[in-house]
Image (tube, rainbow over all chains, first blue to last red; front, side, top):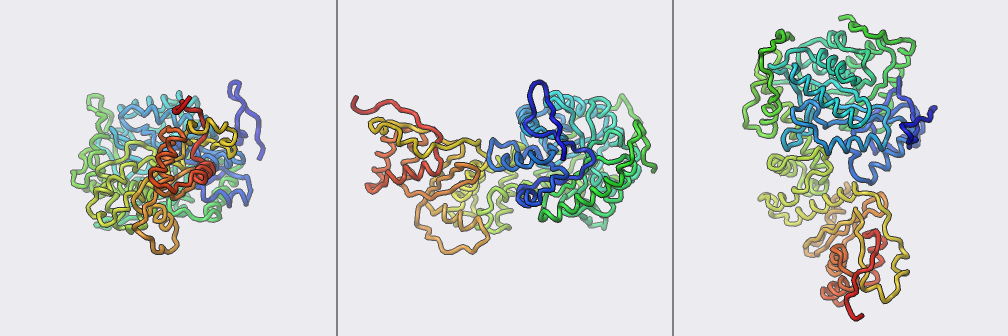
Length: 307
Length: 270
């Protein structure tokens, strides 16, 4: 992989500035490190949850530093509570900036969700209504994050299980307006689109047709699980505990055929398999990305995907 | 899904999170009125997905921090105990690797765990192990550090604690129980009568664990509190006249308990 020398201000970067565009990557699990190094392909990228690298020192930093020498890294925050009504936790924001500064990630992202309220951290991505008040709120939080870390973040669409009475606009419109107001980019989680559409009874194709694909800089693919209610209704759970489903691969192909290659991550966070199995998912994603190589994203094309 | 036209007169409040959060850890609370099932049915089942995610993910977090504790009690017992603790003391920080510092004290009070009086100490040791794992990187005191100190100054020497170094004192063989239950290997017989204290250190990147006899524990406790070598040794000899000062000092250097020495105030003579 070719690395170019880049400088920020007068500081030379500590790590190589590897490009990430058009590459498929996986979640980084420290137990995979020996297998990754032994394989030594140096192709692709790895994503980590920022919170796992907020400890002072020790093995986690050793492992991530080693990976970062050879690969671009994407930093994914899971608990900033950007979508919550309370002011952002300044200590947490400072820690987040610390990880960004330390690892010089190629991509930085967070969720359209909240996970802390008052003094309790719920360790889940909790939903919010979509209306003018929450638009103001989320936009101001994203401004604050971007100003603090000194760079753009990508905002990820959530998986939904219910709807809010107080919502006055569709999620796609909400996300588009957030991006227009804050300049943030987007992380399109295709599995979340599929899961939400099934749970809410809407259409994944309509969602993608309305979604501002031209602002997407990263895609997430993951496995989901199924749960049946007493009434025989099927609910999909965004569980990240298995391979990507056929339907999600299909949606991904449709997106890439329209947008051209975009950095794409295979997320696998529980019941994590051995490295070769996870890597195979990334190789499958890379093949689809490579087929989209000749496609250039039409700018400002709102209806990139027909319904 | 349909959306009503934006109505500026409509009051959009930002208290959705308070309503939504209220019932997440309280299964008896009514589900919030602000949410609904898109097909018009009760949203309870759907709200329960969040309830389940929250409690299960936090139980899993405690199980990951306290694997030996879970192996001793069995998963069913552990998960029930963890559930009670989480509802009483949910995490306040988003850094879950810092969660569970109150769990050992909870185990001590937990009535179903009373016939396992060593369980809380095993949990204390597991919590300390993870603190050491994430502690700041610092090189420990060099092996030859003490040989360079003039003999007449050795007695008043004091030590700076390494960020990873911890001592967990117990009346039970806590190190043996920990070691036997942090792997999948079969647990042999452990004599419950042996008191053991645990020294946890991380001289480089691997956490190290040593069982200490009472005299060595008292010696290191004094040094970790900032006491001088002389004072610490005197305390250890009070516990046992057979305290092995030389080998305890070489063990503590090898384990990486300290990062530096500094001269203390001269306490005797002079």
